[in-house]
Length: 421
Image 1 (cartoon, one colour):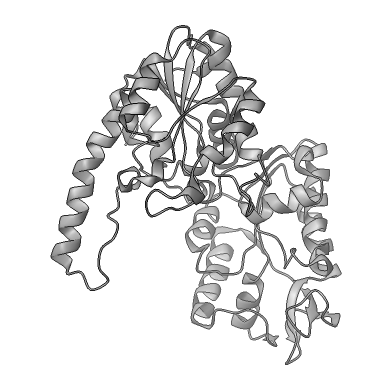
Image 2 (image 1 turned 45 degrees about the horizontal axis):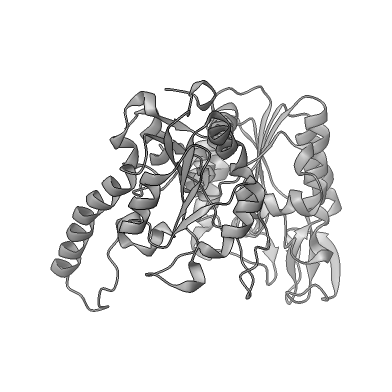
């Protein structure tokens, strides 16, 4: 597999799949340009070599072409950040795109319109009636898959090489994230700098482990983290369970959790996971106390109590001081750390303390030589909110992609470059 560092883009056009799916306000102003900035090193390397990037991205989840999700809204900002007057094609596979791509000179850049304006990008039919029969659904799916081939071939025709720098979509087998790679030989397809970093960070945590290895799993539902937890039980020394999942585990063991969030249909599963951890010799670390509130509000009355003695009418919205201490002691002794999910409702200022304590422990461990990977939207929001992003080893840009990688799944966007099926 060729590395972007060793590839000379001089005189070549490169189709670069980026993740410019940035948040916009009601006036189409970018409110967070982190994802655009993350792709700049790759784009600037191509330009510095004398190449021409043809940039492809999605924005939002459109069900067809719509002004709201047009990439024209970010064109000016991309131009400013790159220091180049970026051209724009108003249709990613129209005649205009083909002409502009063909005419690109070294040092020039073309941004294509939102790839997801076409159903072919995702390979899923649109506009099916709710009462469509199975036969109609099957026919629609077959039709979009057939037209997807033409769509993919058209995108590939714009360039001499392919660069995937969109880790956030690496878990999707979409036209521009995986299928397009088949149109380029091994020496002409590669990861961008961001993808390279993401892949290395995941491999470091999942394959090149320095022990003790601790994973902190937050989030509201056990059901959404089952496969991740089960995969981690074969790898970690310590597994810390936090967030809303806490109360399902607590109730499963006979605890009283008041009005706390719980999945009553997952109580047996929680007990099963506790048993598996014991069987595999994994130290499963659960909360011992909670910060409780009498309503789901930042302004609620609050208090602290043992996690298994929460009164009726009250709910746990964060961990308590005893749990903070236990979690911190485990984290600070670790040499490999994975953090996915806050300890409580960190969006409310009065319930950020637990997540901040976990973050501080990770920062301390990192300063002592541990490798720390933070991933998943809420965890990333935590470290950014607390000003810790530059004090951990790596902050992943991929939410779903990172979680699927942790689950042990092969990511199509990565496999397409590495030629692994």
